[in-house]
Length: 158
Image (cartoon, rainbow, N blue to C red; front, side, top):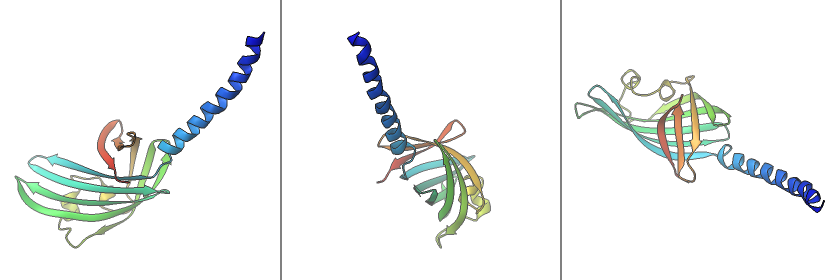
């Protein structure tokens, strides 16, 4: 009988511990702000767009700084340098981004029509929408997925 009396006590301690662990996990991994950088290369035929992204997301708003160079047959065609502002809605690991404005720097020499085959519209024009799934990678950063395809590894900056 002593064994039966310990089981409810053990269960009453175990359930709150599991719940607290789940709350902590969700707070640390799902509700956390994202600050990271990523380098990526987009290829189309003999063209190559090398991009550096600096992403900062918190409280359902974010800004991404995109700096890049477009090469055709290893010759520089132009550069891009812009800040993309957006709002996002988060459901678990799923994020829906809506661009609110795009600010081009003076050194951005690539017209939107030239850049559009290489990057999503969210990097080009306000009102564009894109869905990402973002999974944390421990303390290292995040992996961004489009559908089920990993598209970007973003390293934590702070």
